[in-house]
Length: 232
Image (cartoon, rainbow, N blue to C red; front, top):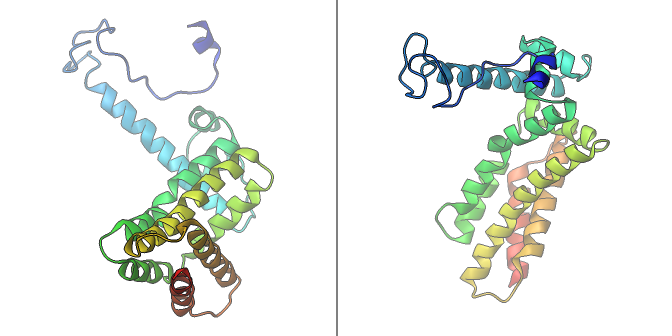
């Protein structure tokens, strides 16, 4: 208990532990006045809301124009919470960035995983992938990826976290060409083809962030189907 008293950081209300409380209703999960049963869900929800606000603020700063430095203090101010509360949820700036890296997975990796894992032949799945990746990436997400790459250059933890996400992204293409290998009864290793498709798609996205006027759908279709033809 001494260490808690010495810790100056504000904390969200504790969730408690059923069976250890002394108020009426403690240990039953159904207390209504002084019991802890009705307070635990509200405390947990409040903590999650605070964390979500901090993540949203961190993302906004990372995707911004750089005029406001990315610091935990600035993130806390933008999120409308105290600096101490920010450090309660995220120990430092690196923790915040790594959390942002993980939080954007549903926006670029999960849809690709679903497109590949869905039903259909290789050609049908490949067309789903091409259609999905041909959609222009939002400016916010594009700037965010650029900022994350910049921080990864100087922070080992950010680099490892971002590489893990890209590894998962590349595995989608390997899985796609595994479908082709299965259709043809084997005979080739799908990994080099998948890695090549991922590299080509990533390069195309990089060109587009620089304003290159490229019709991405036929380019990606030629890439994927050309690799598939070469596998024969």
